Length: 249
Image (cartoon, rainbow, N blue to C red; front, side):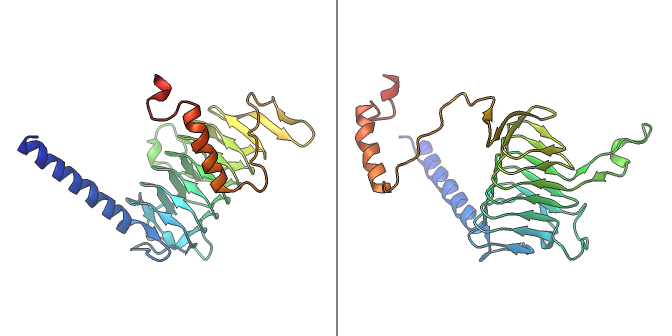
C-alpha cells in the first residue's frame, strides 16, 4: 500500500468517526434539546442530526417515542419570532416516524396522529399560494391557509404531497408521489395526482378490489424471539443463503 493510500484511509476513518460523533452529539431529545425549546417533546423521541429548518418550536408538540430523520423541517407560523397564541400549531402524536428530508409546514393547524410512518421527502403544508390577480407575481399574493389532519396509523409514501385542507382518515396508505387534497376515508389506499381512492376496506366486504398478495401468516402465540432466531439460522443454509453471493450462484 502506498503512503498516499494509507494516509487517505486514515483521513477517511477520521472523517467517518467525527461525523458519527457529531450525529450522536447533535441529535435532539427531551433530555438534550440543544437550542430547540419545543412546546412539548415526549420521552424516547429523537431528532436526528443535522436537523432541517425548525422555528417557532414553542408551538410544536412532539409525542413520545418519535423518530425524526435527518434534514426534517418543522415550522409553525409563516415566519420566525411570531406570537401564535396559547395553542400548539403543529402536533405530532406518539410513535410517529418522519423520513429524511420531509417538511411539515404548519402556518395553521397541522396534526399527525399516533403511529404514522412518513417516508422520506414528504411535504405536508397548510398553506398554498393564491392566484387571484393574474397581473401580480404569484409570490406577492397573500397565501391561503387551511388546517391539515392526518389520522393515526397511516403510511405516507416517499415524495407524497399533502395539501391544505386535507383530512386523511385512520390507517390510510398514501402512495409514493401522490398529491392529496380534501377528505380521505379510513382504511383506504390513495394514489395519483390528484390522489384518488384505489382500494378500500370495509367490515362487510373486506378489501375492494381484493389484495393481489396473500396476507402474512402471523407468528403463533407462545413463539419466542429466540425460537425465531434459531429457525432463521436453521432455514438460511438449507435455502442456499450461507453467504451474500449464494442467491446469485
